[in-house]
Image 1 (spheres, rainbow, N blue to C red):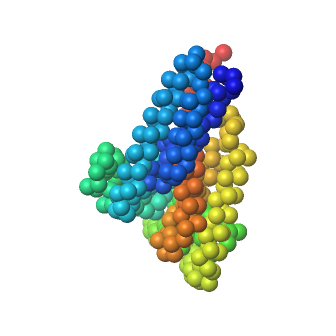
Image 2 (tube, one colour; image 1 turned 180 degrees about the vertical axis):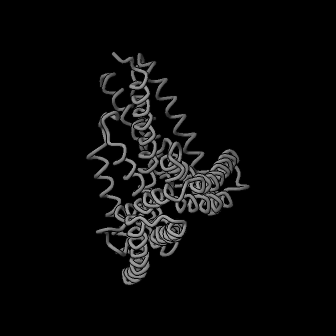
Image 3 (cartoon, one colour; image 1 turned 90 degrees about the vertical axis):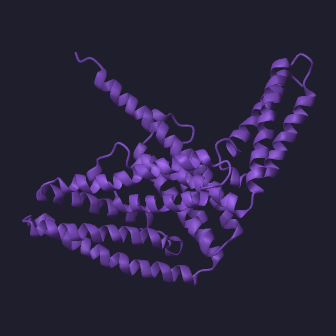
Length: 358
């Protein structure tokens, strides 16, 4: 067997390691799959000719990496439910930080979604409680606490930025905020099967619309009585009533379906997202990608993962558990891909600004 062929086999083993283990949540990794990679690497090492010193050293390094990672995974997975829950919480916190960077960092505070930020804070606090005091998680907990301080600070800054506006300008911001909530409904609920929707998300949307409606009335009472503003008040009130009815319909639909039916619908959602990513992003040059489309894919996948996670708490199911692990793996990669695409777009924009004019 030629050295070129042996090198290609080694690269294929390491590619599987990167895809299945590098950067992924240890609590959910498959030790049997890693054992297979270690065995294949050792078997390939035994086939190397005497003059394959470079490849031998590479395989030694990779085998040591795989073995060390196996020890780390086994330690977490053997630590009992509390330890596994703590590491899972740290992984959720990392995904939430990606989401925060995508939806809040560098954005206009006046138009940010307070409901999402409140959800982020509540989730972060619960994950910190799960992770605090667990061995090996000290660095992650410290980072989670730092992020929580940042989230809470933003929660005070956003309302303050809106309060500084004139009533007329606030009416425009409120219209933008309402349109954002409408867009979220279209993204996550419109033309989707009710039994796979997440009631908690619809409650969040409805709560934000109720807040927006109250502020719109305040602005009206402060003298903003344009035709568009009065129409917006009516439209938001209609959406609140619709969402309230729809939430009840969703809850009834979920109760009427079996666990396997709900699991299957959520799995179908995930498969559609995977297909969309393969079609529009996999293997494509980052500079040419539609960053808004990628953001929507990440957002939809965040919510599918939460729906699966909620489902697992309500009706534990082995297939749903496996599907959730797959979705979270994909989501981590997509959120990192979003950051990479955004960095390229920003660098291009800065370069365009700095380019000399004729």
